[in-house]
Length: 306
Image 1: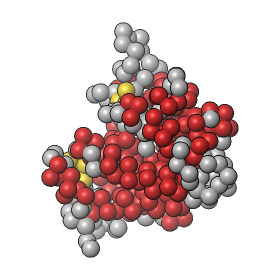
Image 2: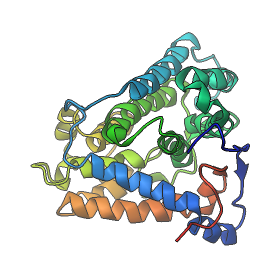
Image 3: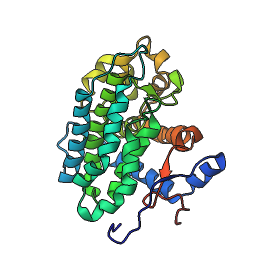
Image 4: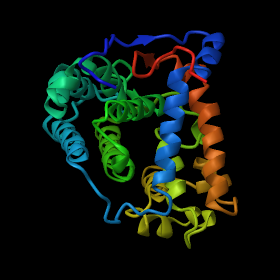
């Protein structure tokens, strides 16, 4: 996609009814986003986070951006307030994000790609939560993934970056989001409670299950807190489980019923395919989630080409 000759547009919300969800399912954006998520899953098959992954300068710049956002949290401590959840200091952090995001993206991209920022900025800004509700969920996670997808479409990232996009960039994003959640006590956006996969994330479970395919660790190991903690540095899925074990109390089967159910699946390949079906049903085709997603030219609501 050549930025010099391409007419980018401000992002626009297009999904307001169940009929619009059907339109989205047949769109170019749905087809390309889904292919992107599945391609990244295949790229990390059997790979560990701690493996020697090829990391280009483009990925390094993305990680530097996430490091800057993390440093801002240190500079903007929580404020004293009566309510425990939803610390209002997050709004200060988020205002700083949206005020500076254009310059951040300009510093990252070649000047020829600056016209694309009008679309990239929307996905980037929406990838870190909502400042009104001080919440975060799988819809925001999807926006960050869409931001990465658009960087691949721009050829800022290329095929050689697939592994690092998951095991370096997205892993750093996960760490940042956990810091935001814990420091500012962010609420889960649209949580299913014990009947959801996780309060905040989905993709690290899907991509993480691909990492674990064919390995010595079976799904039944995920209910053992010691195993999850010991291999959390290697496997994204187990990192998520270890984090859940840190922040939630009580029996695992009660606070994480869906994950407990997954532990009885015999192979990670079945977990991986099952999670993709769940991602479509619970995130991509769920009106309360997808109604907040926006479209431009890089991810278009127009019908997909056959």
